[in-house]
Length: 451
Image (cartoon, rainbow, N blue to C red):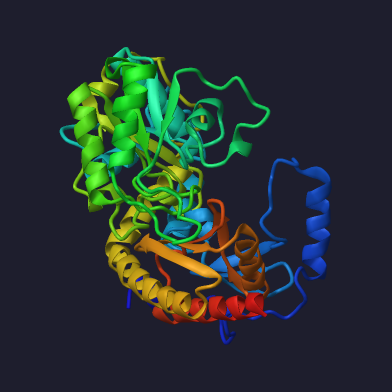
């Protein structure tokens, strides 16, 4: 049992079973908030279901009406150390009392370089490492894209079908998980080329999925490099070591290693986008460590500060030494309070052995999910993942949507991804009891969908 799991529960949670649904969903207070939200917020916000969180602890969230939910989503893989971890909260409080903000772009904040140093020590990158801190993952992608072009003097970049790298113009140009992310926003950033990722779609009849690396590299060598752009003009290849929004797809180790070899052969930078897969989600601090591949640039965000806005891109020092002062900056990036949360997050992951817990609970989840697949194979057609980054794929998008809704009404929070998949990405502090509870709730949801 980790220290996190042994902590004393807050008063509002003591003596209550989880989940604990006491009203219809959404309840009366949540409905009022939902109506206000629907009236004044941007219609670009999709809203998975009418869930209105009020307070949370560990892997449990209470909504505005006092209903308790088990969180198998973690704010889209953000609350890595669980909700309101006391070590993180205390670090935020201490820092807030001393200095809320002063721009690290123009002035020297002690905690900024402290955070950079802590990250650099973890980086699976050869040689000395330099770090730039941002407010978000998409900003970190933008910075990495600028750095790659600037350092190489090349203009083209490659990413993969199914990838998600963010929604700002450069990042959304790299993104190719859904056409809707591009719809109405063209022309996008020029010089971006997409190639097939490691796995093909499941065959509609046999259900088989081709994991051969050949189709990716045949396409790059015989289509992209032959007809579109010579490799000598490609600055970087952006890759998610595990695709997130595209469906929680885990590529074969061989595929990632061949990608590293291809980049080395042609002087192309390999950029690992670990915004969703990093900070311990896979059972290692960085998912790419499972392959032994060492990227030139690594991008992080989401779980980096346990819920506060902090992102980063790390690179071989010589790359960041190519650009001069003023070439890139950020008013708020690396602000003191998120940095304090980030340092506390890294501390908790190590001191509470959360990488081990992610591996252990992930194995339990995968085993339980595969049992459910055996029982509900007409609905749940594939289970895949590593650590606490698990994808469940369903026979149709409609079934996936129904399972997500049925789970919500039973007090289990999950979120869809890909075309017909649901991601399972609970906080890294999740306990065995909570894992088994979540599996039981998902089983109930599947029975309800089958009817």
